Amino acid sequence: MFTGIVEEIGIVEKITSKGTNKTFVVSSPISEELKVDQSIAHNGVCLTVESVLTGTHTITAINETLEKSNLDLWKEGDFVNLERCMKVGDRLDGHIVQGHVDDTGLCVGRENQDGSWIFIFSYDSQHKGLLINKGSITVNGTSLTVVDCNDSEFQVAIIPYTYENTVFKSIAIGTSVNLEFDILGKYILKSFGNYVSNVK
Image (cartoon, rainbow, N blue to C red):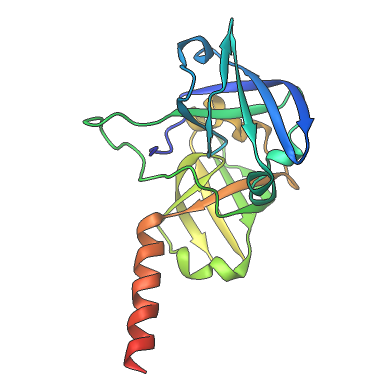
């Protein structure tokens, strides 16, 4: 479990393919602190650390993960948001994030508002029931508040600290991002759907 509060930015140093899987070597300030078998979110995708070397760690994404996320688009030199799983007793500064990406979105707009930024992302309308104004959304592993939304797009506001300390500064129009919708919204929507079905 994660909170969507990015710890560090990593750099994709090497990518190798084996069958339908891809293995990534990532360098970061926290890589040497990681342990084999530890879960860590990479742009919001929960992956298992396979090895740790000086300044780097290695993770592998299976085909299902590559199809659900933007990891298949990663290139050597790309920046990625990193977050280690939360500890019991820690403050929940963001919101409950599982690290299970639901879908990808596309940046369709970004506007500098004299120190802060508005980003607009398009998304698949099948998820429209999971977004509400002032609700929570995870974009590339970053916990954010939805400023505005409709059936195909949503907006988020990025403060200077988040812009400088996450991959948002490298997100341009046309960039694919990982989306995880609020788990509480998923349960509520499913329960409501079951209730309506039972009433019928």
